[in-house]
Picture 1 (cartoon, rainbow over the protein chains, first blue to last red):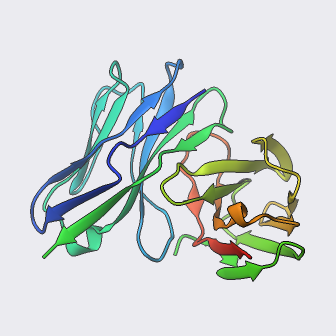
Picture 2: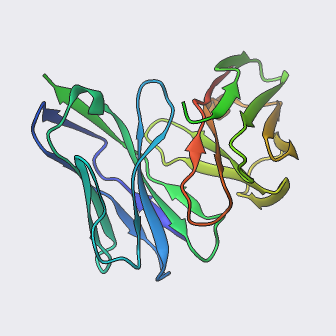
Length: 115
Length: 113
């Protein structure tokens, strides 16, 4: 079974600094999709960034980038120039390409941004 | 606002009550999902519907009963729940079951007393 692990329940970063959130996953599949979602206090999950496993190039979306290490089954999120609005819960997610019903999330990392 | 609306936002119910959670999307999506979010635990995928047909039941107790009358609406009927069922219940939709990401609603905060 696929599992997603986020080992950092909570992290803090100073405004304008850079922070990296960790995610590892367990799978025997070779093709899949990985996502980072943000859940602000409003509770609505918002997609931050996605990565296709067949792509070697790390995805980037403005201040957000990932470090995808397929062999290590690691998918970390780097937030550069942190802003107060980045404070939220961040969830890492895995989606199988072979069984699209299998869409798994980690337990989340709470990010605090200090002014 | 992602186009997925859940009602009610908050619900308190007794263990003998029957209630329903509603999810609605007008994004033209064909796949809809129910997730359970408990503190400090991974989101738990409960049910998946594709074109109104249930394609996944992730070993969910029968006290949770989903219903998908059409591709735009998804319900979660609740009866004889337990206090440990208290959680945030999230609905999501996606264009299909392919590689696209899911769009989430704001959830229903359920408290069972």
